[in-house]
Length: 267
Length: 242
Image (cartoon, rainbow over all chains, first blue to last red):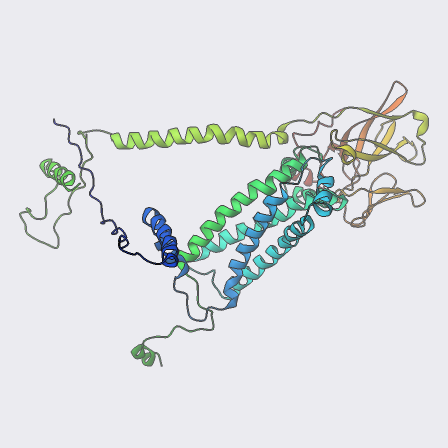
């Protein structure tokens, strides 16, 4: 029996035509050339990635009539998260998560690093702002009935994001390592431990042992700056994908307008 | 591509499994039997697993093994302390003459090493008083200052003969038994012994409202009745025996 080798597939579409060459005589003015260079770079990237169609579909998608300012709360939460990520990364450049250096390094950031109190303040207040925005966003979705079919999964993902964000607040609270954050964490871990059966083991996991020990702080730091942010970023991506794929809902006070004959029939 | 499908269809038809709608004899267009599913390349009569299924199964298995080889040790590394029993060395806190029968003496010792001041803890120690200590027979009573509600540090108020917690208002009597507020069980205790003329403090243990001993539990976990089974002994603390 002869071996049959399948033919390679033909390309499905023809490639887009190459941009026209500039005319050799004279040529456009320098300003036009500069403008075209930007377009040229965008076109070069687009031709190789197809990112233009994706961006256009994302930014210029249709939204229902009646879309209002309440619909911006989700984006506001996203930007609060991005602000936390950026300020957090820069705070990590000065912070030292060891029990005997943590407090001093936070004092150093606050009092000595240039703009340190501003960046730390942004991170500290941004955390509260993010939680508030999440609850406002959740309230908007709830009262507009936007969690209903086919968007239930996005509601579930949103709830997981809420829990993860609260986890960020809990793990981040310990990092200044002053009296308040130490005892608040002791109390918080013990509240977590009151969950029956699994609670005590989860507390041991959080503390890395039966007592608040040498590695508890670095463990909280790793959870705060790596584990939970990665999970949040991944889930936000899925959350946004579903928002774009399913579209947003019209506000509940806006009734769908039926075509003329049907409108008469309904009366 | 097209050529590939054509030959497969031909092979299927030649096998005599089905009848092509175009060549079918009955000519009933609507009820024409559907085209049989083409056999994969290399198919032979009576085979139980196709080459393709074997290879996709193999790839999934290899990927799973590779992922597990990385993920399982990493998770074990992070979860390890849950299953590891922590060592707690006996520590001397003073000569027996330091401790009376009727009032507590505060002692400071290291609960956790390597964390500086944060690893130190306070305990209240007194000699056993036969008049009130009828249930536990240790020669010295060492009461932990960790509140049994959520772990704030309680302090001994000698004039009132009470332990009082600053966080949520827990109050305990001189035995460490709950008198008021939210705590769910008496204050924890430490094992004690006398060695080389020094009173020594050992591992922590918890007690229920009858002062029955249990291995150390975290605050907020009651130990009476069925509760002791809902908050089981952890692997990280020593057993209570002895």
